[in-house]
Image 1 (cartoon, rainbow, N blue to C red):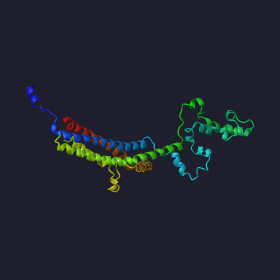
Image 2: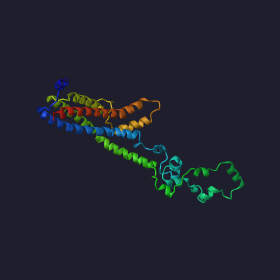
Image 3: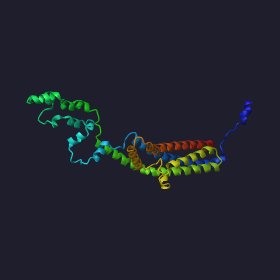
Image 4: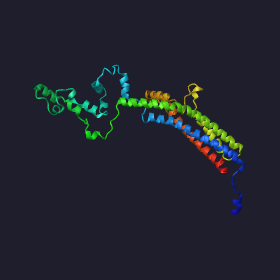
Length: 308
């Protein structure tokens, strides 16, 4: 009985008449894989730019620079002491040399040594000034209290933190670099996505003409790829005001990020629109493209590898 069941089972054998179709499918598969990875890299590049901006702050200009632009006094008029007085919290995060200079009381008392002034008062003070000094707390110890003086042995192994000017220059550099990379990546991504859809369609037509297996997987891959095209095509050129695309313009991302930071805390509509355009859409595009690639690989195994 078991032997009769084994005889009734279908055994798939190589189809000799399918060899010309298999050769054409291999060529179509090569270009499909090429267009697939080019499109995937372009979409991942745009998604990575959003993550670097939102969670790593790579393109953010320091807040001190924004305050400097709002200050009516020009930068050339203010000296180093005025700049340190405006931003006292940022001086100890800068280089150790600037920290020691900011904490040096010699700027206020040039004729008195800092060590002698911090230990005992001047002997030539009147009695009235001494009584006032006893009642009011002396500001000198509070200026030097808690300040870590840089030593040659400790400062050798620690990298100096970036100043606000250096962080601003770094942010502008990465902004220009990302703009120069994403602008051609957007064009290449849209063109490769369209060529990928055309290649998969041609592959499906050859498989149907040769009456090969894997038609269901190939058809599913084609329609999933059409959904992917809906997420990457620049629809703003056709529909006015519709700017949702996984291959977005980086300048639009910068403007939307600035508008989101300036929005009211209780207003959740701009927040939802921002994350929907620049986070959910690229992630959905990556998932759709990966699912289409998996279905296409399954159809290729059934249509080509089973006939070799």
